[in-house]
Amino acid sequence: MKKTSLAAAAAILIALAPGAHAQWVVIDPTNLAQNILTAANTLEQINNQIKQLQNQAQSLMNQARNLTSLDFSALAELRATLSATNQLIQQAQGLAFNVSQMETDFLRLYPDSYSAATSGTQMATDARSRWRNSLEALRTATKVQSQAVQNFAADERTLTDLVNRSQSAVGALQATQATNQLLALQSRQAMQAQQLQITQDRAAALEQARQVAVQERAREVRRRFQGDGTPYTPAAVNFYGN
Image 1 (tube, rainbow, N blue to C red):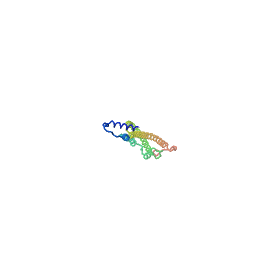
Image 2: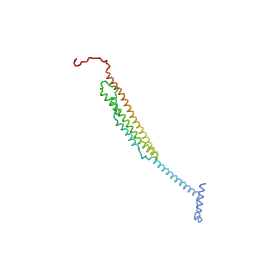
Image 3: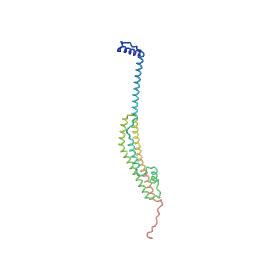
Image 4: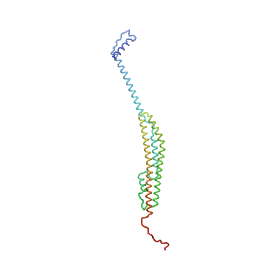
């Protein structure tokens, strides 16, 4: 029906064209309708191809946005703050953080017991060293606490920047990178909390060890004062050969 209508319309237009009364033109309606349909189909295919190209171009633009890298990195700042806290621990005085060195010093300064061969001077020197270790451990803990407080301001700025960039991300890659850096900030804060806990626990442990050593030293001093338990036997004292 559609083909017949198109053919009839084409025949009428040709009949009404200028000069149509001067001569007769032989027209094949079926062929004309077929040509018109072919042209319409071709035009539709071209339009479809244009739409496909437009969709492909839009897809490429979306991929480009998704692959756009985030032009901001907080990794250097996070590592710097973590390194600052770690340096405070490494610079700590007193009992070493090295495992082997710490064990040697601990066995020497915090013995299970004092032998009779240990001089009173040596015990006093060890007591002074233990006091110094406790003091330095407390000093390190307070330094790490102060560093953690200073890091709060930097963490707040970093968090604000990362959240803003995450919310304004133009693609999946930028959003993912911003999220990863937020997770890195959280990990750095967790590591700092662990560092702080280590220094606090170390100070508490050394103070407890010092108190135990004080008790052992007091026991040895008391034993030496009391002697070996042999009853006292009076004896005559010779003055000037008399």
